[in-house]
Length: 274
Image 1 (cartoon, rainbow, N blue to C red):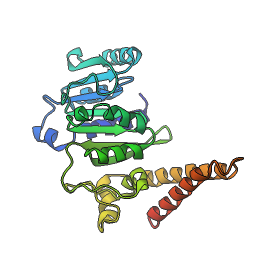
Image 2 (image 1 turned 45 degrees about the horizontal axis):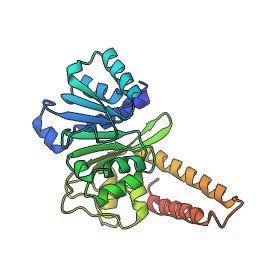
Image 3 (image 1 turned 90 degrees about the vertical axis):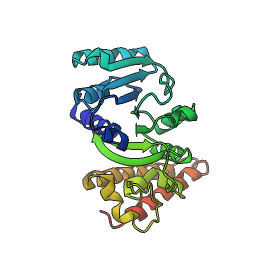
Image 4 (image 1 turned 180 degrees about the horizontal axis):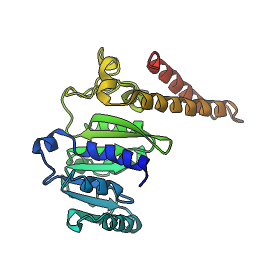
């Protein structure tokens, strides 16, 4: 497990066990974390080696990853009574409300959304989630907001030169929760500090104090945040240039319009931050 992977999984592990009810317990006894799509089983090793929880359920759609996870747990010397391997898709292998925290990391935002939407009643039976979408994080944020799942925290880390967004969320949402009005806010605003991560829930983008305190509350390192948005801008500029050179500009007109809107949005929202 290289340094970048360990750092990313360390952040996920801390977010998985850091919410109010678990902190009030004062110890990991009885705390169960479900790692959905466990792949190599590295996250459960970090959780159990650090005594951050008492048990882990690892699920995966395929037998191969579960076999690798079992091998890694054995190599790490983890007591087999502390974990369980289950074959299945998404939340299907879990009982309703069985886990204190459900982790879904390393998948696309659309796939995570679809897995949650398969049984939204079951999804809402879990109190805490930690997501790490590889792409399309905005799609996931919008789904959470529309289904009364409240984003409580976000982090960004760098792994092998790639920026990873990590989202913690809880059910049910507080009464004071406000949804974003602009679609692009779901893609970018949390990383810009337009979310307030306090007891009041997510602040609307134009909330008077959202800009002032959002970055401090989010815990994002300024240099990481700056690099994250520089990479976004480079990617968007590349898409824009490629679209302008298109042999069928009429076909790509909507893509160009969307890309230019995103560039203008980011320039406006990040003005004066760098």
